[in-house]
Length: 265
Ligand SMILES: NC(=O)c1ccc[n+]([C@@H]2O[C@H](COP(=O)([O-])OP(=O)(O)OC[C@H]3O[C@@H](n4cnc5c(N)ncnc54)[C@H](O)[C@@H]3O)[C@@H](O)[C@H]2O)c1
Image (cartoon, rainbow, N blue to C red; front, side, top):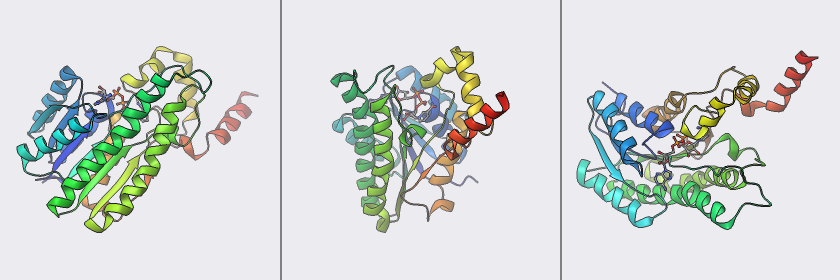
């Protein structure tokens, strides 16, 4: 018996990486899974993996930056499964090689629209559905360690991820008395297509591995494990916070660098 048996879990950006990892984990936990993304082939592959767990996948194309798409996604979920219990606002993009002085308005808008507005639209629509059901629920949004740090090469990404950390606090206050919790997950470096370039640059991979206290880069299963906890009954008193599956990198990367520097002497 899975801890999410009989529940319905929706994941945006579920065609790959962390979103796929969470969709499959929720299926392993017993949930029927709604897979939303813009990548049709990727969604079909995630659906295949969900079916392997003998759970029902429901696939719907959705651009999370469009309120009409997000509302249609929630309506289609309820039409298919009759309810919604867990919603993960995971869809995200990163703008490559930008900085504060040169990032264009278009680059800024694209990142903020997907990573912050898209998260807001998903949480809002899901929260209203859960309130209408009257049986509580779980809202989860994906932030990042880059919501803790600045990033010279990705100002919009860092701003969006910091915004997500704050946004979940507002939702936590707004929906807690309905038995709904809202939390964020702030992953460290995780091997997905978003970070594929790390694998192509061995010196960067070695640097990040060294900086991460546990000594390795994470896997989507590390993010999915936290999502599974937050989605389940054990997390009923966890609300308005961000959990960082990051191998300890935000615990003090500067002091860790000092250790590495000392070892190098
Ligand atoms: N990989 C990491 O190291 C890492 C670290 C911290 C946070 N994150 C976050 O994890 C989340 C998932 O990223 P990932 O690493 O799995 O990358 P990914 O590129 O594999 O997945 C992102 C998914 O979002 C989808 N997407 C993009 N724009 C969309 C839109 N407008 N509507 C619907 N779907 C859209 C993409 O098609 C893709 O399937 C993102 O929010 C990302 O910022 C990743």
